[in-house]
Image (cartoon, rainbow, N blue to C red; front, top):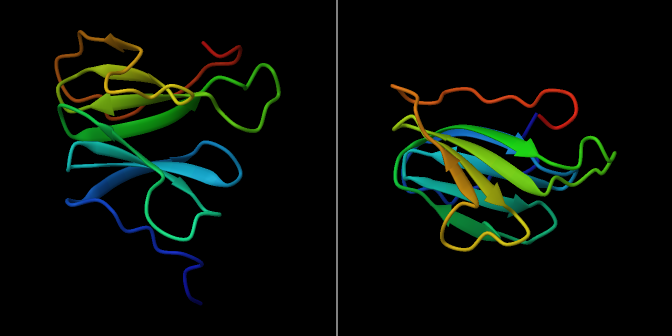
Amino acid sequence: SRPLRILQGHTAAAYCTTWTSPTTCATGGFDRRTLLWDCRAPRGPVQALALRHHVYALTPLGGQSQGADAKTALAVGLGDGTLAHWDLRRPGREPARELRGHGCAVEAVTVLPGDV
């Protein structure tokens, strides 16, 4: 079998990925970027989030308690121990907020029921 599509855009190893809707996904890599992809678009990422450190973990946020298919935010775990919260409706140049305090890389992120 062959892949349906190959996503090319990172300049260093891609390390993690997550679906944010039935047709969009995000990838994170050691090039210190998170790339947002729309599988309906012909090629390349539709958006890039520039970060200060390597991306180790991604998880979609928002919309779960409302039953929506598309997620409105993204949690990004970074190599410096930061968890960055990006609003995908207004990505800008900086995350909406950052949670710091981990002594090592944030390598996994999950969302609890109720969008906690």
